[in-house]
Length: 371
Image (cartoon, rainbow, N blue to C red; front, side):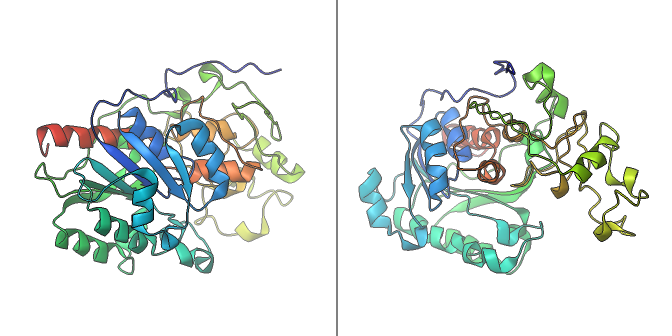
C-alpha cells in the first residue's frame, strides 16, 4: 500500500477563496475546470462552465460546485438561452466571459488538421456571446499559433472588440513567469470596455519552479514502476511500457538523458529515428530535476511523445504528477473512463495558477485602473 503525503504547500487546495468582489464569470470551453478553479481561487464567482465534452462533466462538477457544468456545443447555443439558464444580463460591468477554445488546429504540435478543423474557428462562435452580453471583461487563453498564424480568426475578433468599444492587451506569455513550473508559452488577451483600461499581469522573477520542488518523494510522490495503477483519487498512475521501451529508459541517463544514449544500439534504436538526430530530440527523454517541466500536453504520460520520462524512475510522468505540474491542487479529483481521457483533461487545461493570476489582475485593474 503506497502512502501519499498530504502536502498542499506547493499546490493549493481546491478550497475556494471567499468571493470578495462582485465579479462573476462564465467559462466557455471549460474542460476539466482549470480556468474555473483558478478564478474561484482569486475570489471570482464562476457561474457556469460550458463544454460539449460530456466526459469532463463529472471532473468539473466535483471540484467546482456550485459552478454548473452546461453541456453544449456553443455553435448550437443561443445567447438568450444562456441568459435564462444562469441569470446573466447584457451590459453587466462585473461580468467576465472567458473563451479558451480547443487549440489543436493552431498548435505547433503535429496533428492531423482534418480532425481539428471543426474547432479551428470557435472564436467566431464565442464572439456572438460577447456581442450579445457586452460584458465588462473578456479573457482569451490559447496556443501561440492563434496569434501568429495570419489565417486564424483572431485579427477579425480583435477588430470586433475595437468596434464594440473594448480596449485590450495581448501577447504570447510564458506561463513559467506566472507561477507554472513548465515551459508553456500561451497567447493571452484581456479586454475591457470599462475606463479602467486593459493590461496583462506582470512577469514575476520566480525561484523554486524546478521539477524537484513539485514532484518526487519529498513532495508526496513515492517511487512507482511503469504500469502502476493507483485506484485512489490521487491517481499516481503510470502508463505501462513495452519490453523494448523499458530497456530503453533503463539505459537512458538520469536527470535529462535522451534517446541518443541508445541510438547506436541496433536492438534499441528505432527505425524512424535512424540518422535523424536533429529532429524529435526530446522524445523518449527524461526531464531535468532542476529545470521546469516540458509543456504538459495531452500525451504527457507517454514516454514516446516528448521529454516526459521521470528524471530517475523508469517510467513516464504519472497522471497526478502531470496534474501537479499543471498546478492543479493535489486534492483535485479527475474522473474519466480511461487513463488517456484523464491525461487529455489535464493537458488541455488552463493551469489554475495562471488563471488565478489573471483573475487577481482583473480585480486590481478594476480597483486601481490600468497598472
